[in-house]
Length: 339
Ligand SMILES: [Zn+2]
Ligand SMILES: [Zn+2]
Image 1 (cartoon, rainbow, N blue to C red):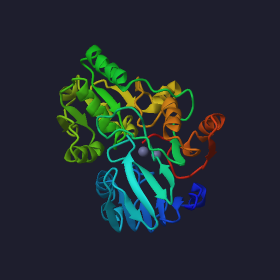
Image 2 (cartoon, protein in one colour):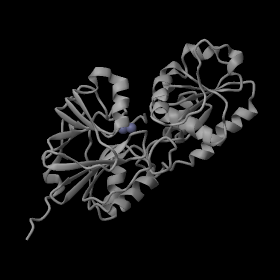
Image 3 (cartoon, rainbow, N blue to C red):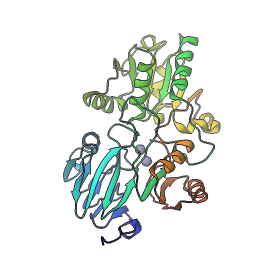
Image 4 (cartoon, helix red, strand yellow):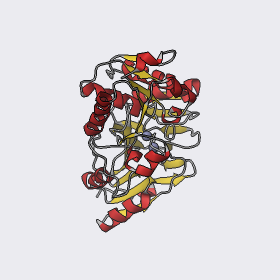
């Protein structure tokens, strides 16, 4: 008789550096430099510099190289979506997480037992990355950034229409939209293009490098122009994208009466929009909302759920009520701020 499959918690556990797979001898998204790391995606709270050996998708490796140069890792090993690789005594395959370009869930198999580490993910279509693929597993390790029933993201198309409508209403003003540099920026651009907006889009300097990288990796973004050195006249009636942190900077005074917008799942919370002086909140998130999180628990059919970061307690409570064995990991080092 074959030996029964080992329990997932006998071979994967949390350490001060993050999740650790013992029979593969690697960490997943370690918060401190590790000898061997599997990286789910390029956001800086997941992909950190200084690991000795890194396994990730080619796009994630390209993002890490762009951000960290030599410090991206001692050796960088690409793994294509769905290609299974042996690492120590386990096999690892990366499958799309639908979060940003290159984002992956790590599917880890050990002696008939399967663990999926989702990283960050969302379930709705995104023109800049491959869609999330649910994988059946014994243990599903999920994020819960928007893990409260109040978080139900509207359709991104409706949010983009709000922006385009405002553009029509205020042709003399410029629309300054706060977007995170990796993922959100390129998704907002791609959504604008999908909605038929084909004018040049102006980018703050901090957004140019990553947008060029997306384009070089095959994501079409249409005409993009730097906003450095522009006259106010040039951006009248135009869309200017900038990192959220730069929305209130001095350079924005050169813009013609900007309508300030911000694209984030947190814009669902009116006080947050108000506190940041955002006139036009756009609820566009790269993380699963409550309905997506709970549907995913059903889709993956795992007996056991671990919740890594965000609003863990509500999701754990929900999962327990639904008959899953569930617990919060309270991992540190992950941003609750949507990046
Ligand atoms: Zn992320
Ligand atoms: Zn994250």
